[in-house]
Each structure stands twice: as C-alpha cells, then as structure tokens.
Length: 153
Image (cartoon, rainbow, N blue to C red):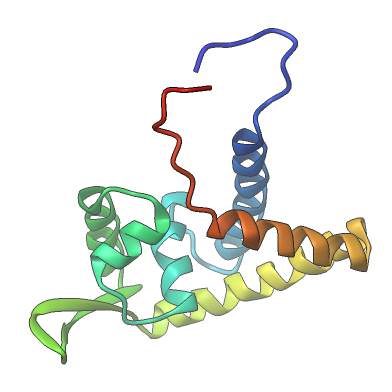
C-alpha cells in the first residue's frame, strides 16, 4: 500500500494497531507472571488454546491468519518449552490435536487475568454503552465475508 499524505489510516490499520496495543499489554502481564521464555508470537497459539483446547494445527493457523508452516514452528517451540503437547486425535488417528499442558494452563490463567483487566479498562474509558457497541461492531466486522477481488472501485 503506497502512502497517501493527508489520508487517515484505514480501518484495518486502526484495528491492527488497537489489537497490537492490547496484545502487547497482555504479553507483558504474562511475562511478569513468569512467562519469561515466551515471545509475543507465541500468543497466536496460546490465545487460541486458552479459548478452545485441543485444536488441530490447521485450525489454529487459520484462526490466527497465519500460514500452517509458520504456526507449526511456533507450536514446535512451545512443545519444546513445555507449554503445549500434541496428542492423537481420537476421531482421526492420522491427525494430532494440540493441548495446553499444566504449565500452559497456568500461563493461560495469567493471560485471562490481564484480559479481564484490559476489558475493565476499556469499559471504564468508553462507558458501558460505547463498550457494548464496540464489541457488537467488532463481532460484526469479524463475521464479514468481504470479496475485494472485484477490480471495480
């Protein structure tokens, strides 16, 4: 995307910047709680498993918007560090599911404490109605199925 002086940042950039600010604060809280061997990118795996444990690699990658190979590298690193483990998928023995270990669950709990603090701070800053509207609007944006491939403006 080329720079266009005087043009405000696109909504996608504002959403990314807001996400990055929240993710960085949550990451710092997890590091403070003892996750000193974690990197911010690990949050792409741990966040998904904290919401729904036992996902396949392709599911985690898809939800995070990452390539499966890149996600695989993060998963391998977290397995080595003891945060997650691969287990056989009972429904499909050819596949593996990824689960949090006790160490991973402890750090997920620390991240939920930080997430709850962030939610309270957002509610305080915005007020109840704007906070609820923001969440509804973001959920709507997340559900959009945009096709931007049409060359017409």
